[in-house]
Image 1 (cartoon, rainbow, N blue to C red):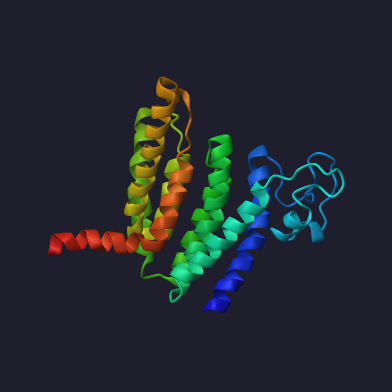
Image 2: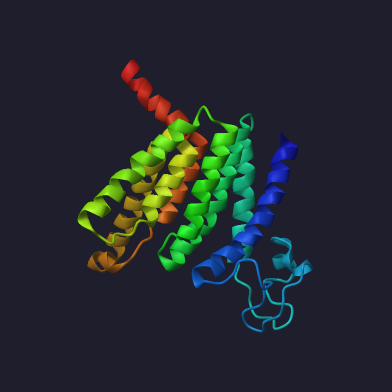
Amino acid sequence: MLAAIVLALIAGLAIGSFLNVVIYRLPRGESVVSPRSRCPNCQHEITALENVPVISWLALRGKCRECKNPISPRYPLIELLTGLLYAGVVWVAWDDGARIALGLILVTALVPITFIDLEFKRVPNLITGPTAIALVIAGTLLDLHGQPERLLAAAIIVAPFLLLSLVLSSHMGMGDVKLMGVLGLALGRALAPGIFIAFITGTAVGLVLMAKYGRNARKMKVPFGPFLALGGIIAFCVGADLWDSYLDTFDS
């Protein structure tokens, strides 16, 4: 088990390096495949040795090798975060291969969604769409028995909002709703506590902002995607147990 967790950590660090590219380029309409990463200040092309997750940033002391311009610590932090989340998925779902696959797909989507939403206040369809497809395929191939539950969870969340949008002909932002659907495809019944956690944490942050900034807090656009991501991660770890415990209270 320890070897698998370590391998997951290493894989997550590598994936995190790629997710840094996605986070920077995708919302700017740039290709995430080419060209190679460059220093935004001097355009120095990042070599393979300069692109080793976390280690390269530490070795370069957080600066470009050529122009010595500072490199944001966000890059190694995202790599480390992704690595730890990958390792956590394997640790939590050690005896369930299908759940591990769904968890890794979910983490790979939630990390860039979180940071893009924080900066640009939107959840990209180019992430939620492919992620939903990947989750449906993985769930069908690896856990056909549990797939109806996950599809139902996604439909229960997404369908009412889509219907409301069509009836009212509104242009309401649907990014968060689509993200909820993605969470449903990965979590199934654990989606309920995940959404609850997201709303509770989002409300708490909103109250803190109101206490600090008063009426000006209403003008602040606080993205909900990061709270959904947090709720999704917690729900993946303990959501099913929380839901079962809640239902057990009605049987006692």
